[in-house]
Length: 195
Length: 316
Image (cartoon, rainbow over all chains, first blue to last red; front, side, top):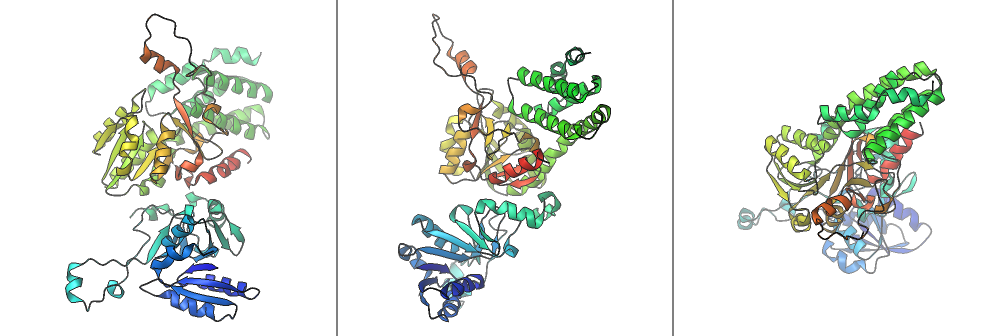
C-alpha cells in the first residue's frame, strides 16, 4: 500500500509504470483547498492494476499505520536535502517518520536548487484564502485572519531517499549532485541571497 | 651545511609569537604560515629533501610550542601540502619563490576568507532572531557585524565560556556594535535553549567526518540543540579542515592522559580552582550528526560535504 500527497506528474508516471507489472493500492491525500489530490486519483485510476483511495489531509496520521511506503513529489529540492513541496507534505512525512515508514521522493535533477532554506518565508507564497474561508461569510472574514500557504518545507531528516533519472540518492549526497550540475558555490551569484 | 644549523638562526616560534602579539585579529594558523614563509625566505637549502626537512622540523617546533593547537596544525599542514605540490616540478629556488608567494597570498587572503564566510553565513541571520553564541570567535564576530550592517535586528545570548571567559570579550564587542547581548552561565544553556532560534559556534578544526573540534562546551551545546530541534551552525575558514578522524573525545591530539585522571592530592590544602584550570581540557569534539550546516569560505556545506572538500585539496 502506497501513500502519496496531492498532484505530481512525476509520481503519477512512476506509479503507472510500476502498475504495468504489479497490482497495488494507492492512497492519495486530497490536499485542500486546491483538492489537487482528486486530479491525481483520476490519473492513477486509469490503470486497472491500481486501487485508488482518496483521503482528507486530516486522516493522514490515522491511515499511516497501514501504509508500506510513501512516495512524494516535490516542487523543489533544497541544497541541504529539504523539500519545498505542496502544503500538506510535511504532515505526511512526519506521520511516516513516526510510523517508521520509508519516504521516497521522486524529483528530476531540474528541481534541485543550490539554495539553502535560510528563511522559512522566502520560499513560500500565500494564495487566496477564499478557498478556505469564502468571502461570502462577510462577518467572519472581518474578524478572522485566514492564511493559505502554498508550500511546505520538509526537513531532510524526514526523507529517506531521492529518486531521479540517475537513480537513487541519499539526502546527504545531494551536495555532490549540486556540485556536478552547478559547479562551486563561489561561481554562483550569491548576492541574490540578500533581500 | 646541515638543515639544523641554518634553521637554528631563525627562531620560528619567536616570530610566531611576535605576529600574534602585533595583530590581535590574526588567527594561529595564519600566523604560523607567516612565520614559515619568513623561515623559507631566510634559509638556504640546496636540495629539495633538505628544504622539506627544514620546513617539517619548523612545523614540529610550532606545534610543540602551542601544545598541539589544532588550528595551527591545520595551517602547517596546508603549508606542507602546498610545498609538496610545488616540489615535484621545480628547482629548489623556484620552489622557494613560489612557496613564498603562495604563503604571502595566503596570509593576506586570510582576512578575505573571513569576509567570504560572513557573506555566505549572514543571510541565515534574520530579523527578530535570538542567537546563541559559544565563546569568542573572530569569524562569528565578522559574520554578526555584517548582519548588523545589513540592518538586521537580532539578539545574542553568549555563553560565559569558562575557564578563559572569552564570552565576556565577545559580549563587549557586540555591545559596541549595538547588538543587545546577555551573557549566560555555561550551565544555563539547557535552560535558555527554548528561547533560542539558532546556535552559532566557531571552530578550532573541522575534521574529515564533518565533525567539529572547538572550545570545551560545544559538544554539550550541540546535544541540547539537537534535543530541542534547533539549528546548529558552525562557522570556519577552509584552512581549518584537518585530516583527523576522531572516534571519541579522547582521540584528539590535544589529549593528555593526566587530564582529569584522579591524581593523588596529598598536600595539606588543595587549591581546587588551580587544579581545575590545570587538569581540565580546553577542546572537545562534536560529531557531525549534531551539525546542521557549516559556513565556510568555500560556501555553505553540509557535514557530509566536508570530506569531499578535503579530498579535493589533498589529492589535487
